[in-house]
Amino acid sequence: MLFHPFELAFSGWSGSGKTTLATAIIRILSERFRVGYYKHGCHRFDIDRKGKDSELATSAGAHTVMISDPEKTALIAGPNQETLERQAFLDCDILLVEGLKDLPLPKIVMAEGEQNILDLSANGSLTNIVAFAFPDSRSSSPIPGIPAFNRNDASAIADFIINHMLRRATRRVPLSAIVAAGGRSSRMGTDKALLRYHDSNQLIHTAELLKPFCSEVFISCRDDQAKLYAEFGIPLLTDSYLGIGPLGGLLSAQKQNPDSAWIMLACDLPFLDSTTVRRLAEERDPFRFATALCSPESGMPEPLAACYEPKSRTRLLLRHAEGINSPASFLAASRICELHTTSAETMFNINTPEERALWHSPHDRTKDQKQ
Image (cartoon, rainbow, N blue to C red; front, side):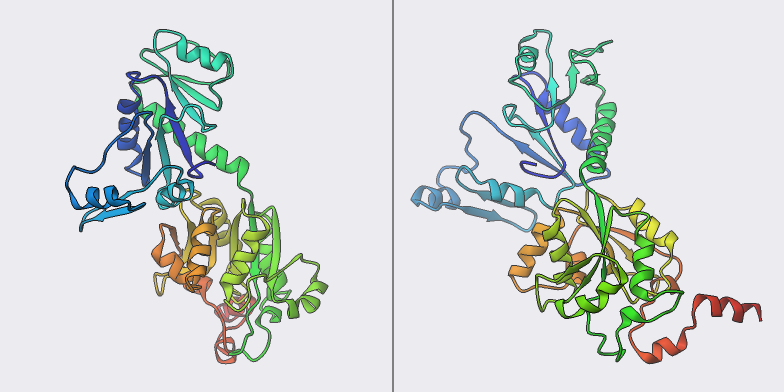
């Protein structure tokens, strides 16, 4: 990744149709995605007008200038702003780049009738080619196994881009999980993770729900809980970010494997079932910051029943640095996918002895209904 987890460049000589194709693709993709566009030019450009306030500030020596009105914001900065470039596009689902053919970005190469751009591919100067776009239809590709499109078939190229990015995410982004058990259970008065609503306690039960869908499952806990929880045979991941609640467990997991998508499930959701967990795992949207289950009662995304994509880590760390440690507020402020459940019971979390007394085990409720 250079600028964005889901990035793709259109590469070719001037006049090869890069902008025409890129804008056609943007129109199609923007119906489903938030699309970023990065235009790289070899020549100088001016975004300011002579004599305007921002141009006067830049001429006076200001390194970074921001201009805003109620509808848009523009940022003018010096060269070599890699961190700024990444942050600027983080809220986008997909980034399309025009130019930068020398960088190792995945590329659709705009091939004209003459062979010179293809010569760069043949001699290894042009790398990471995922497709070719020709002015006409071709029966074969210059490189076997790499598709060739008619550049006027924007719909087919847009479908290819989405499928290519999804396949890449499937190959490169493993799905891992933590059972969040680091709370102090102060309202319950006893460790909620060790309560039984099923044949096993909530630690084991929740981990077993996750195992069929995740490459690895951990118990997320505090150091002082590790000795007790170790006896259950589930790998432990103790908090390395202390005193910030569930966010500490999530950031600790992302620190261990920043390239994974992480499902975080609370240990106090005793009626969460395999069907719902499967839905979270299989319907997660890798283009968004996170995918969260929503309670039918509140309609709000549940931060402890959510899958956090790798790109969420940067934003979560920035918020943590600012003292904002609420996963719920992160979900509320971010571009996420919401999965609405139909059963309020599935998302019911039990925090007090009184709440627990109101709820029997699923087996007992079934027996009561039959009677």
